Length: 368
Ligand code: ASP
Image (spheres, rainbow, N blue to C red):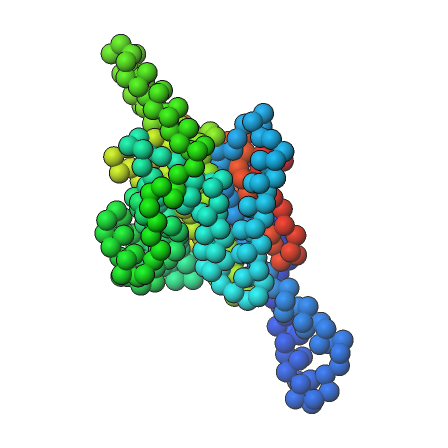
């Protein structure tokens, strides 16, 4: 049964048709008498190869009552800019990896999302960023964590994948590597926005209040010490299927608000927050990272498809179901090898956008 929390859109497979037409073209071209109708068909067929591009800006959306029309407009504009940039790359025969990196950089540069500029603050009042990217064509992956001075963590994750023998680098080591690669550094103050700083002050006040509670109450509250999902999120991610059939996914985040002690969430963990495999799908997750790590959400979805014959939609529903059972919230976006999209979340909303081969862009924030 189709779950109303998710969508799945089929993109028509035209590969057979393209193959037939291509054979026809070869023969006709040799005779130098290509008729213009055939040419028109070939052009349409070749440019209409299936592809798909989908992005998210976090599953912790603002409560509807706090969302002003102006703010909603800003979110929609930022998502549209990122979606359009990725779409333009794919439509011009670019790679899914380039589309994913480019769109995520745009979302990192927007102060609306919890990634790059606008990242949430740690309990120490700093910003620490995590990101990952994966190439589904060869299962290569790159991930970075606890970055303090890198403007676009997603690009550093890609450099780890392409220019180092490693998959994951964190902290000072990752920044040393970044220096060697000529990556752009910024001061910590670059990431700060007033909204995030005010959230930090709220979290700090709540935490201090909790610490003053009598020991019995405090013991119960300890697992709630780390401030929660709704309206403090905005992790960003993208998943793409390009015209060559290559899948890629990426995710970038400032992590959980008021996180502590070098905490790393699911976003830079390959198989938890990000996964791509040309045989199955490309997935980017957002939510309470600890739960997504424990379930191994992104890889779980791919495995359910590979070994369990599930559709991307069914697989996402199962994996997010497991997160929910453990008490976690969040969701995923993704695209499968046939161009079917999935958006599945157990929160009130998720900033998201998608575009398929038909070029129709859809941006949504709350449940439709
Ligand atoms: N998953 C991210 C983390 O736990 C947070 C988010 O998606 O907003 O670090």
